[in-house]
Image (cartoon, rainbow, N blue to C red):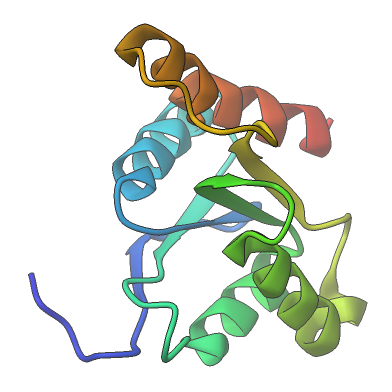
Length: 137
């Protein structure tokens, strides 16, 4: 589904945490939210769709409601788009946060060429679930 350029999509509503994802990480975010829902954790999933322009309003509205924010990205932690999202959330939603913005990323190293190793480096549903669960405990 093609949406308006620069408008993020809330692909799953939730009340306990917000997971912000882009591209290939969106299905993993939705799958993680479904696992978390079985445990009683209601997770909102936002598909950014674009980074430029960035839909700050959708991000800020969601995080202000849930009080928790997680980014999932296929990038190293250093200088990834999640760092910019964390900065924006700190500026826009600081007093609404119940904990730090948490980034689920690849290791700070080049992605391996072997499929099996690449699969270990890229954030998995299991790693997202474990990270959210750990932060909400």
